[in-house]
Image (cartoon, rainbow, N blue to C red; front, side):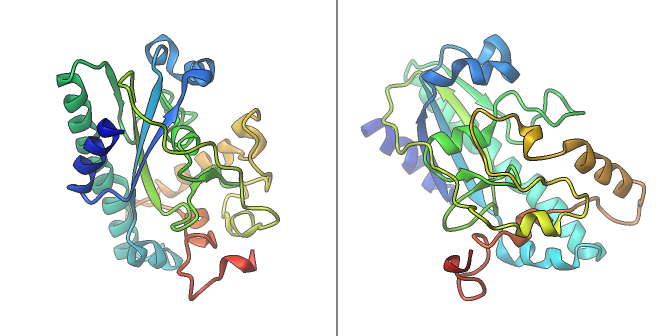
Length: 244
């Protein structure tokens, strides 16, 4: 627990909102489906998350406005990802200097660009660490901030304490993300760990929608509707969780 606290104190200095440690030893083969041999052999996965400002996410209701799209694109896709990458690198160096192996996974890195597949699923690590559940929109959803956050992961063999366990889905019968998706890509099926992503999300529809937006050079290609509408991300005074 001492090492956990040391790492947590470092993240606190960078205004990190979420910190969790998961035992990933039983999920080695699942991780290796995307990451291959390089992700094998690690006992723990550290998950770190930074919450997106509500002012920027709430403005997505006007996402075709050039100022809105530029702010969201720049801040949410770049600035926060850069912050996460820096923090993860610092934690990696800290553990390396103590003699432990680490594998920092970049925040927005994709090894298969066409299918949006990363080396390691940050959502999976965060889910196993008990930070949230995987929603119908295929995003990590936290009880307090919904899907309004960015994540990063660090794999390590350092002797850490796990902070939680796999959190079951709480989407239940809610279909807000299904109804608002402009690409009609969300199938409305609750997450089960053994299911492939395609059962919940038609990624080709989502990808093609973004490709169409990129043809308009007058503004940044953003969507975020499933992130914006999630009741767990709304301010409590706007949408009570009991309404789901």
